[in-house]
Image (tube, rainbow, N blue to C red):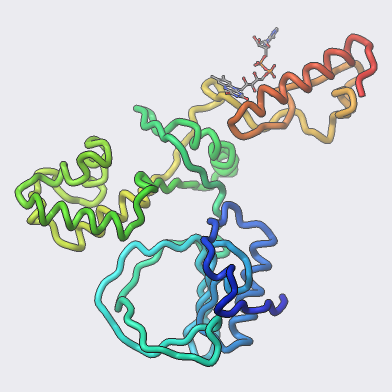
Amino acid sequence: MALRTIRVMGDEILTKQCRPVKEMTPRIKTLIEDMLETMYDAEGVGLAAPQVGILKQICVIDVTPECDHPIVLVNPEIIELSGEQIGQEGCLSVPGKVGIVKRANYAKVKAYDEDKKLLAHDKGELQLVASGISGIPVFQVSRYISRELEMSKRPYIEVDFLPEFSAEELYEELLRRKRCHPKLETSYILEGIMNNKLTDAVLLKCGIGSRTLLNELTGKQCQNICAAVKCFRADVSETAGFDNAQVTSGGVSRSEIDFEDMSSKVCDGLYLAGEIVDVDGICGGYNLQWAWSSGYIAGKSAAGGKQK
Ligand SMILES: Cc1cc2nc3c(=O)[nH]c(=O)nc-3n(C[C@H](O)[C@H](O)[C@H](O)COP(=O)(O)OP(=O)(O)OC[C@H]3O[C@@H](n4cnc5c(N)ncnc54)[C@H](O)[C@@H]3O)c2cc1C
């Protein structure tokens, strides 16, 4: 662990947007440990990664006097706010100053903690099909899911169906619709923004009847709809399997192959290429390129030509 320098007001990095954490790497773990140590050393109760110069969506909190209850939030998102409180507040990046700040009395936050492995994260056009979900973002994350399933773990997905709206913006829009169209049925609450069949699934998840009128919806139910749209969680029971796979992970171990000529280190005269090797890439033509490049080398080598 190490103390990091706390950036103070005026430092440009404090005004920049942070990127989400895609994978919980050892570097990220070290960053989290350092942030906690830095926060405790500065006698603060909260510290965000940009305050130590790292543009990642991570913050650490500990409001206990004993400093024994650290909370780590990775990729945090506020999904519910209610009430109001006014109090004195300071900030480690604004040293020596305190101010009276108005805050929500209650906040519900969705985030990963430092131990919960975020296996993969992707963005793109999701296809909802009879058997489950498909499309490029699903191809991108399925390799991680397959491995978890193979290890008898229970992976799950969380889908943000409307990433272009923040939770607050969506909530405001729902309240606006409720105000403007009080006699409309709830199944139309997301009309024009989201497919109606998907809205029905969201309402089902929230336990709200689709014939309920908008003026009968409570604020809490609107918040639940927002939460289900922004973070629709589903357990993954299986992948579509080998026969339906576009790319498969696994295969002959790379350690058993001489990449100079794609020959097997285990079996003389055997050359390997493409899918049979434990190499798989994300979408974007990498798998075809790998198949062509390795196939070219393996073919030349097998035919006796030197291929360096
Ligand atoms: C629907 C689909 C879409 C894809 N889209 C993309 C994409 O957009 N971009 C990308 O990079 N990758 C994509 N891929 C993956 C990519 O096509 C493969 O990674 C690549 O083709 C693998 O090449 P390969 O030569 O190793 O294997 P293959 O292309 O599978 O070739 C193996 C060949 O061996 C033959 N064969 C099998 N068994 C025997 C046998 N016993 N005797 C003789 N012949 C046999 C098969 O008939 C086949 O012709 C896609 C795959 C699929 C299925």
